[in-house]
Image 1: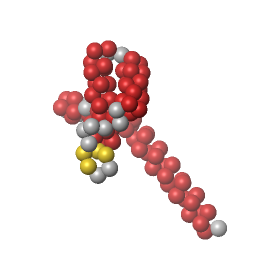
Image 2: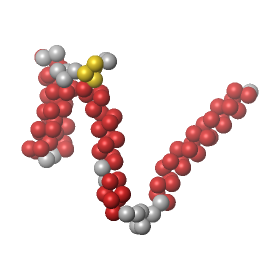
Image 3: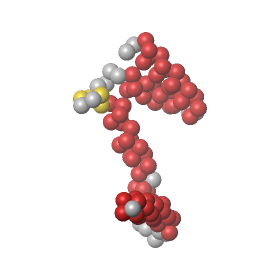
Image 4: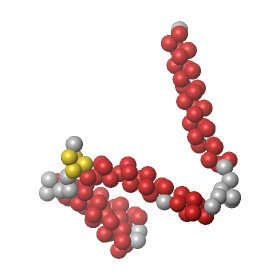
Length: 106
């Protein structure tokens, strides 16, 4: 019975914390912030996504590996994105390229 109460309290605290994390930024007004902070915050999503994705592309186990299929496909996707300027075309061609590289080169 005590374990159930602990679990319920943990779930409630986690849900309150999740709500606060999502709701508080909506309450903060950025009208009075300096321009350099506003412009810096524009790059935050790109920095976070890069920090999450790049290690999974480059690191294989505990060492860097620039010859894996994911790294080669990333380079291909960047080139396709620059030339096509279309998200759908980039995704579709990159997935196809990843399948080909993964099955025939590695």
